[in-house]
Length: 169
Image (cartoon, rainbow, N blue to C red; front, side, top):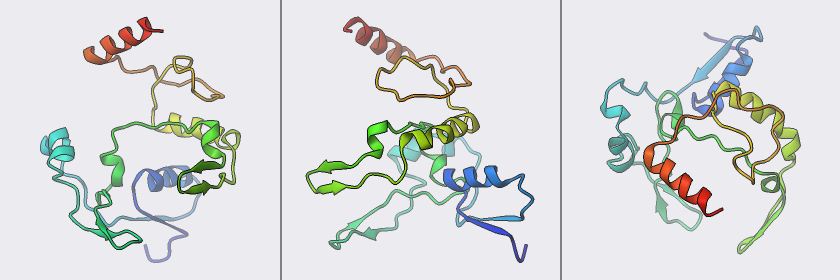
């Protein structure tokens, strides 16, 4: 493809979401990805290999503003960091879009409100098959539609912790 109408940089969760949304628009779309496909092996699906041994984490170092080196934790594979993110998609709360005062100063409010983002959260949750039940989290923000997919049952230790916490009120 020599002259695409749209070029998307990266096939991670952001690039993939944009590509999915544009797929039926009739434009030619090119996705540029610096990474290779993650091998389809048990090793590439191993929590220990990925998170403890950091087998797939690049060794590159960046420098923060003060000059100290750090590893940013970026993964360069088809699918980007979404291959390693733990499959958790959390909605920000209304207050997360507001100005926030903290020890380092003030973070400005977003130029958009939660209410403006809410329909897009619902579309993304459907696209990514987010599972859940409304009403279990007293801090959850407004949802215009319920989750389309029921939650996965808790693992036994989580089920015990949930029962104990419910017992405490």
